[in-house]
Amino acid sequence: MTTWLHEQRLEVVLAVFRSSGAETVLDLGCGDGALLTRLIREPNIRRIVGIDLSAEALHRLRVKLREEPPAIRCKVELFHGSLMEPRESLAGFDAAILFETIEHIDPDRLSLVERAVFRELRPAMAIVTTPNSDFNALLGVPSSRFRHPDHRFEWGRIKFRTWADGVSGRNGYGVTFEDVPDMHPACGGPTQMGVFRRHVKSML
Image (cartoon, rainbow, N blue to C red; front, side):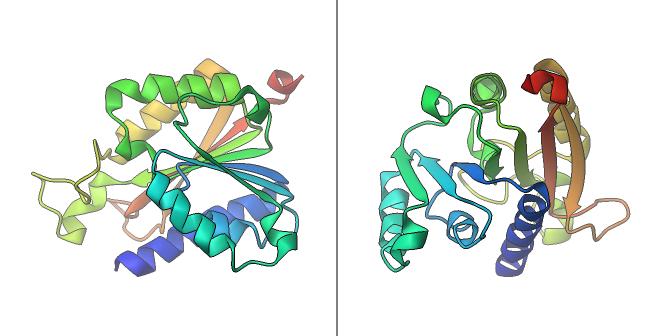
């Protein structure tokens, strides 16, 4: 189930990128490159920057990238650090992705994520995926714990959409939502996704 769901998430995010026409991408919390190693093969993407706090994960990603041809490797830059302390040079990318990332951050620090991503980096589009706790019972996850021991929280759809609506409204974005996959009439899907797009007037 985990492998199947992981692939579903990746394919949905890739589909959003393909339809957006994005050429420059920030993978915030890239880990060992589950998404990034797929993005580099997209012909329209010319620059990808991956950022992660884990030096070990970045090492594994660099090892993977050594197997790629130079024309693909040259698209990628990797930085060891916090997405909450963004580099000024990374502002204004076409897209940013927080792929299964926010749930690993303490809830009282999400305001720092909002400031960094939506006020300082200000990508034209941002994609956020996170577990949907409404679905946990169907996965056999007890209400007393999260799906992963490193998760700091897991939100249901109402909580996630309330947070995302607040972020978009405060920062000049619109947001749409999708269940990944949409498989249950009451609980949605095991993953939820918000796609934020910056309003045209905010891009001037």
